[in-house]
Length: 220
Image (cartoon, rainbow, N blue to C red):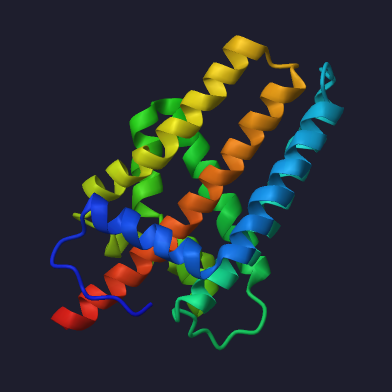
């Protein structure tokens, strides 16, 4: 991504480049936002009142797979449109799927223990998915490189993540409290807000990767 190398990674720089990434991949971002939001609303509405473990787990698994597929294609568009793609591997989707499973499990465990470890994991692994899509390689290599390259940069990344996540969580809570979990309008608002947050988070990872690449080339 053509950008001036920042001396320091700041929240403002991250957010600015995040919106630039979305602007360059507007079509893919809109498709992700609308399609994923609509599918999640449909799945949520279909499983209203369902308490049997198997259907609930099946719905959760289906939502996860749909989310991974949608995220992969929008990330592929973002890294391509920002000039970050350099992979020689043909198809990296299976590697991306494995990475997403590892990432999600660790993230959930981090949030179960206490919220802060989950946020810390998000900050340190934020460029793992864009790295894999852009350059190929193994899931563990992408996770390890992301962990190394975000060292000592956690604070601005974490603050930028909170700028994106807090409004999404707040809107979801307000919709649930005011309209109820079973209200279709509240469900639509919550799911579309969640999809918007997903687009922003994916674009933020691509933006940070581009910023770190520029910074390292300038100081290398």
